[in-house]
Amino acid sequence: MGYAIDVDQFNFEQEIIKVSYEKPVLVDFYATWCGPCQILKPILEKLVKEYDFILAKIDIDQNPELASEYQVEGVPDVRIVDQGEVRPGFVGALTEIQIRQTLGKMNLKSDFELSLEALKNAITDQKFPQAKQLLDQLFSAYPDRPEVVLEAGNFLIVLNQFENAEKLLNTIPEDQREFFLKAQALKQLIQFKKDATAPGDSQLEQNYAKACQFTLAQQYPAALSLFLEIVSTHRQFKEDAAKKAMLTIFNLLGDEHPLTQEYRKKLMLELY
Image 1 (cartoon, rainbow, N blue to C red):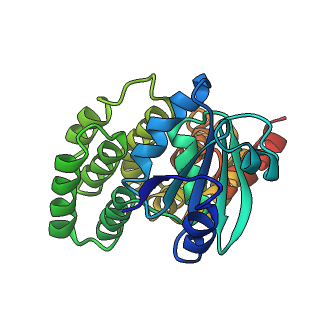
Image 2 (image 1 turned 180 degrees about the horizontal axis):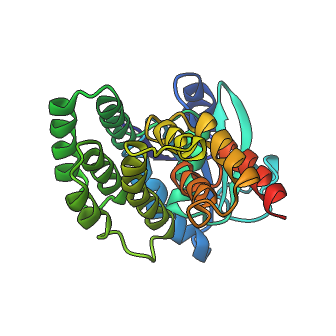
């Protein structure tokens, strides 16, 4: 969707500042002798094919005036230019996941992310034939992306195909920590489904079942609030099931999610 271009002091204004009024520009200040620059280069060149931004590459040795003007002290130094304004981006060779998160904060989404979002919406809206078609397309186009495996597992859980879901989620290796934790959390949703449909007779059991129902409906604030109440009043219920349930939701949402940060603090206060 985007493209990469070599920029120098003579075309900087035209290719970066003016173009930034049409779409964001990532400016990569680099040096040919810089090891981290060589690590970062293929990642950025890969992402520019997925996202709608421009990658402008500036060799600081060939363009010392620009490096001086923008106070580049170490490379790689990536700046973000939007609407004519040059803003800090990041310094050093970030991982692909970290760069994708940075792009997400700029409200940039790749074709893959847009397709994944459409799949999630189809599952939520119970448009299952559409979801199946989108899932097949994603597996065909991105066979090695663990995000697709996670959504496929979630889809199978929604369809109550628990055994197939577990088999699929078990294919995500432990060394892919972020995705492995989400896979374990999705597997826990299977137990949530069972608990949600068998609430028991006591008020406590019914509250726990209700919290599981909130979780399955992705009403996470209500689920976390109710699970936290159970942790506070009946810590040993089902061998600390409410605390484990909260940890599962944290893994589903990710460490950076505001709800994770808010309720992790609240859980720590209750436990200690």
